[in-house]
Length: 133
Length: 77
Image (tube, rainbow over all chains, first blue to last red; front, side, top):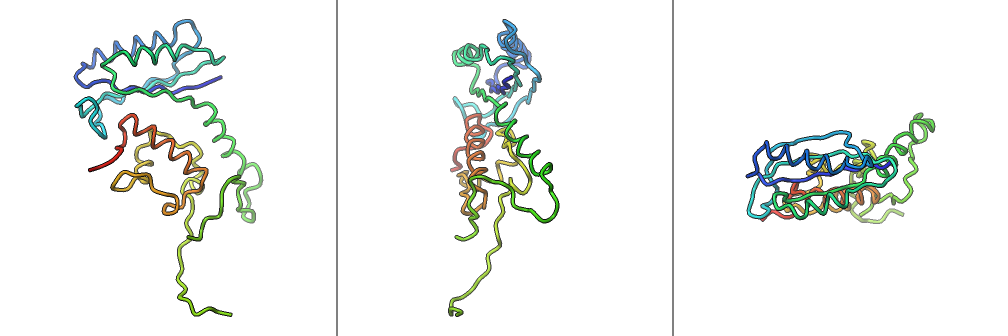
């Protein structure tokens, strides 16, 4: 099972209705072929950009949480289409399952392995004490 | 043998993420990331923030992702 997050920023001159149809289009593309499904969709709406992109100062943010059981999916295709769409200022796909799993494991470990007062050293593999400067 | 050097105490810095048990640093969490980008919007070095190597690495990744999406700035002029 792989999970992804796909966020994209739409030109603010595009109307809200059109953003909705765009997201629906992409939703359809992603879910087509039953290789992946969208678990959650978030619409952040209009948001100020931290820096202007294409002389535009704002953007409409949309976020997909995607789940793909066997790792096969057409996200490449989706990205390709987004690249060609000049209404999309930015997009980013991130694979999250590995990082989340690792985080969950680390969070589970200290509580399971006796979190009593005495042993405070957590098994942080690659950390120097780093207190001296 | 005490050396006649001025002794001054420095507070022991702790990695924020270790302390708070944050193991997945989300690029969407602008509030969190902002604590690590001072005025010039550069990434705060861990020599100053005290973040451990591991978490600094995740933090760096998250900040760069957030920058790409214009959630946080590259620079401020």
